[in-house]
Amino acid sequence: MPSALAAATPERLFRQEVLALHAYHVPPCTGMVKLDAMENPYPLPPQLREEIARLVADAAINRYPDASARCLKEKIRTVTGLTQGMEVLLGNGSDEIIQLLALAVARPGATLLSVEPSFVMYRMIAAFAGMQYVGVPLTEDFALDLHAMLDAIKRHQPALVFIAYPNNPTGNLFDAEAIRQIIAATPGLVVVDEAYYAFADASFIPMLARYPSLLVMRTFSKLGMAGLRLGFLVGGKAWLEQLEKLRLPYNIGVLTQLVAEKLLQHHEVLLQQAEQIKQDRKWLYERLVGTVDVRAYPSEANFILFHVAHASKVFEGLKQRGVLIKNMNGVHAALADCLRVTVGTQEENERFIAALQESIHNS
Ligand SMILES: *Cc1c(COP(=O)(O)O)cnc(C)c1O
Image (cartoon, rainbow, N blue to C red; front, side):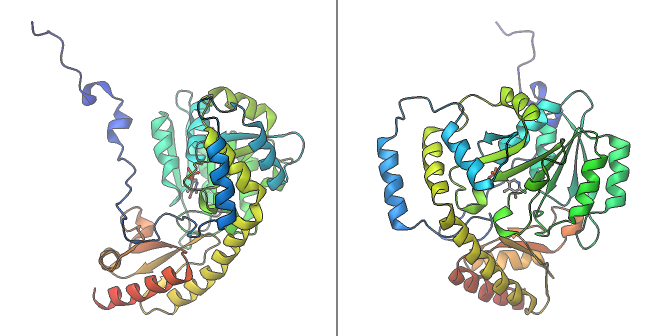
C-alpha cells in the first residue's frame, strides 16, 4: 500500500547548508604533469622504500592501530621541538582537524572567521558544522587588513579563527606582528595553519607558550606524505584533552603510523627535498616574472600564484599540452585571471614554462 508519507529524498532530509555546498572537485590527471595539488614531486630514496616495504609486510593489520599513536606522537614532538606542557593531536589529514575544531565550538550561532582568499576548507567545514562563517578580505597585495580584522573580530566575536601561514592560494606569509594582535584580540581560539612550514622560515610554534588560546596545525601532505593523510595540532593540554574526545578512536591507521614514524626518523630526507623545492621555486618565479603578460606573486610555499590575461584559456591550453595546474579564476573576486602552479621537479617546471609560453601566445 502506498504510504501517505512523502518519500525521503536528500532535498527533504538533508540540512540546507549541505545541499548548498559544492563538492570538493578533484580533476582527472592520468598521464599529466601534475602541478595542481602542492604535492612533493620526489620519490623516496630506494633504501628507505625497501625499509618501508619490510615494515608494511610485518604490520599487524588484523589488529586495530594504537589508538593514541604514542610512538608517532613522540617522533612528532622531537622533530617539531615541542616543549613540556604542549600536547599533540593527530588527524587523518589536517582537514580532519579543522573539522574536529569546528565540531567542538559549534554552539548555536558560533562564528568561524578567516581571511579571503584563503584555504577553501575553512568555509566548507564551517558549513558542515552549522557554524556562521566570516571571511575578511585581504588587502590588494594579499596582506592582512589588520584594521578590518580587528573590526570583524569585535563585531562577530569568533569562537575560531584560522590563519594559513603561509597562505594558500596566495603563497605569502602574513605580518607576524599583525597575527599577534589578532590573537590578543580574539575571544576564541586562533589556529595558525602551517601546512607549508617546510618551505617557509617562520613558525608560530615558539609563540605557543606565550598565547594560551593559540594552536598551531601542520600537515605532512605538502612535505611528501600526501598519500598517508596525516596532520597534527599542537597547543595547550587543556584544549587538546577536550578535542581528543571528539577524535574517532582509530583515525590514524596502522600503516600510516608505521610509515610516518619511519619517515620522521629520516626527516632530513624530506627537508632536503623541501630545500630543493625552495631553490626551484626561485627559478620558477624568475621565469614567470620574465614571461610577457604574467604577474607572479612572491611565495614562501611550494606553489606560485600568478596573474595572466585570459587565465581560463591559458589554463585549458596548458591542459591540452599535458600540464595540469589549478585555475583560480572565478574562485574569488581577488583571484580573477589567477592560476596557481605547484613547484615540481626541474624537468616538470621546464615543461610547464614552455607550455605556458605557447598557451599565452595562442590564447
Ligand atoms: C593542503 C592544506 C591543508 C590540508 O592538508 P591535509 O592534506 O588535509 O593535511 C590545510 N591547510 C592548508 C592551508 C592547505 O593548503
